[in-house]
Each structure stands twice: as C-alpha cells, then as structure tokens.
Image 1 (spheres, rainbow, N blue to C red):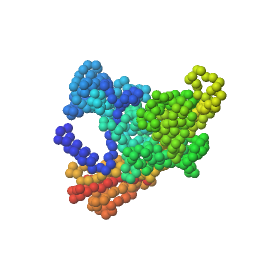
Image 2: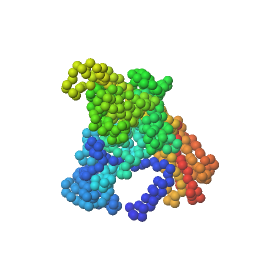
Image 3: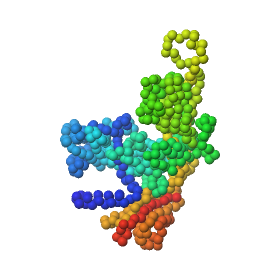
Image 4: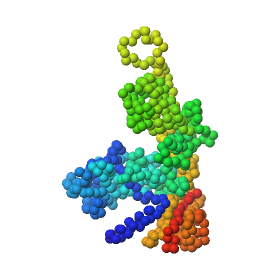
Length: 557
C-alpha cells in the first residue's frame, strides 16, 4: 500500500472517530496475564503459529520478517530494547518496538495454558513496553465479536441456554465498550475485567448468541450502560448508589437500581427482616444456584486467626478503622455485626468487637475479603451472624488459681455462624436470574429490561457530518422478528440539516426533505428489515451543511 493512501485512510479514520458522539468499538486490546492471572508484565515470552508469522517493528513502521510456520519465536527485553530469537537462535536485537505479530492462523503463546490446553488467539499479538520500560505487556488486538467469543462462555455456563447467553453477550459488549483500564490495553483477560480465554473458549451456542445480538447495546440517555453483572442474587439486587455511592469518582448510574424478584418484597430494614429473609429458601429467581443460600461455621479461635491476617491486609487498602497492624493480636472476639446495610441486606459497613479492640470494615468487597473460610472470601456480603456457646479465654499465665476463678470472668462465644445468600457484588444482572427468566420464556431484551432500569435496546448512536472523502456511515445489527415487533430509526437533527440520504439494506431513501423539519425524527423502519443482519448507511452531509451534524440510531421494541 502506498504511503500517501495510508496517510489518507488514517486521516479519514481520525476524522470519523473524533466526530462521533459515541464510538462503537470495533477492535479490543486485551492484556494477557500469566498462568496464575497475577502478572501482566513480562521479561520474555514465546509465540508460535501453524502459518507464517509476520513481524512488524512499529517504531520503524516496517515489516522485519516472515517467520516460518511452527517456529518458536522468543521475545526478550534487555535494557529496554527487544531481542528476538527463532528456535533458540538470536535473529534480531536492539529493537525499539512495539512489535506486532500477525498470522493467517491462530497465534499460540507457548507455555501458557487456558482451559488446560495451550493458549491460542485470533487477531494479532502486540508486544509493548510496560510502565517501567524494563518489561513488556502482551496485548491481543482482536475484533470485538471474536473477543466476545472468548468471553461469553467463560462468564456464563453455556448450559444456561441461548436467551440468557444473548443477555450476557449484550452485557459483555456494553462492558468492553466503556472499558479502558490501562494505557496499553482496554481490558485484561482476568476477573478484574471479563474472563477471556481466546480461541479455547469458542462454543457454538455462545457464538450464536453473539451473532444474533450483533450491533445491539443497552442504552441509557443515548449511551451504552455499564452493564454490571454477577452470579447469583439472593432475591434482591442492589442500587449502585447504596453499594458504591461513596466512591464519587465512579459517577452515578441511575439504571443500576434495586430489583426485587417477588412483587410484594420490601427492603430489608431491620435485623429481623434480614434474618427472616436469609433463612427463607424461596425468596427469588435464583433458588437453583448453589450459592442462593449458604452457611459458614468458625470456631472463635479460627476466626480470630483469620481476622489477624485479613484485617492487616484490608488496613493496607484503607478499608479498616482504626488500622490494624497486628502488633497486638486480635483476641476475645465478642461480636460481628452490621453497622450499615443496603436494601438487600448487604453489609457495606461491618463492626468487629473484641477484647483487644473494635474495628470497622468498609465496602462489600472489603468485608468479603475480611471473612475468609479456607482462604476463600465470602460469596457475598449479604449475611447475618449467629454465635453459640460461652467460654473463657485461654489463659496465657500458667499460674492460674482458684482465687481468680472465683470472680465472674467474662466469657466469649465459642462459635460464629455466617448465614447468607447470593454470590457476587449484587448490582446489575444476576446470571442465574437471567437463566431462570429465560426458562419462563423471557427473551434477552426482557431479561435486560428486568435488571437494568429505564434502558432501551438499540444500536450505538452515530454522528453524520460533511467529509470531503465521501465516506459513508455504516451501522450493522441483527434483527430477530421473534424477539422484536418493531424497529425505529431515531434521528436527532438539532441544526435543521435539510437533507440526509440514507440506505436500509437495499432500500434507498434519497428524498428526506419531508422529515427534516423536526429536531427529533422517529421513523418506523420495521418493514425494511429482514431476519438476520441488517445494514444502514448514511451519506455524508452535503457541502451546504458543512459544520452541521445529525445523530442516528436504531431502537428495537
């Protein structure tokens, strides 16, 4: 490709991207972690493919090699520069990078396993310097739909069926559209973002769910929502503001509201309400989840030992007041009680009372990480605590005598039982709930509307403006006539653009003057849509309308 054409295409892409009110992400950058998902910075890594691998040094914008199929390519970083070895023989050194590896076949990260077999990825692998410039990140650059193929069956069991998987696909598409967790990548491949295992995850039914929701998002006020989701609801989901509202930098999410599985259910306002609710085995949609209700038992000594370690860890995160440094070991545990709960009974402020001190733990995840059983955090912060037995503290002084025993020495509980329900943070869509709603005949759009308040199912709004390159604006989406009865083209025309020709599949709409008088235009386009993928193209605005814009999207009902 000639250099001039490359510059032209880059200019067009930049122009279009910066004009759009909301960018529909077509490519995703995924940070690939190590085997234990604990590190993203590498000193060296090995790649291979069953086809030729092209290697580009992006600092020079030049292809430096075509490496034969089956060869092992090792990339090392030495003093901030890259060295490449092929089958153990040094081939290139002192490369500035970033380095880009591509193939007509899948790329394998040698010695990294996902789902018990070697990790393989579609798209390209980019090797780019980490923050300290002495190590590098491994980034899978992949198109959105293939990224989702590596996510959806990891985030939801494929046994949950097509409609639940479609809801999951839309939620995952929304999530990654809003994500940017690092300067080098949008999302990671671990639970800190969405679990992504690449090619090893692809499954026919989840692929179908992704294909049949192509181009579809959940919107609120014209923007893709942050579609939070979690495993299991105890029967009530929570408001974002109740769980995370103190974190002002996160913003407000009015579509993440508490949802009640039963119509007559009310917020849990008292400790008696909480106990009654969590002792019930039939309080919602998710009763078939193994984590719908759960119990964990601790001896007092066992729990004191756990808290000695976890309180120190959570103190470092700023979630414990006063800070617990462990110098004076926690002992004489008397009580663990909720100081602040949400509508679902989720504890967002916990008090731990012991002879050696009283501590307050904040945030639902901080609380879950504080109460560990067999080194695993609690499934949720939706619980209450029962104690049993009374016993004296073990005396450290061996010179016990009957004089001290004659006093009324305070006794402490011998066991603590945590009784609760649900699994996860509890905000947004419950995955088991989605599964069970689908079993009652609900489609994916109805499932999404159940969990996210005041949303609409739509394509992402795109902005049309004048451009001298005559680049048209394209939207692709799947229309399922069994799910949706109608589709509307919504056009915002605040500056009274006089004409904006567009095309729906094979239908040309050249004369639009009759509908341009309104600032908000809503046209029923159902009759022009087919079962399957549909394409809408908008022509750029004419030179007479230079400086003006319109926004369009398709809403599905």
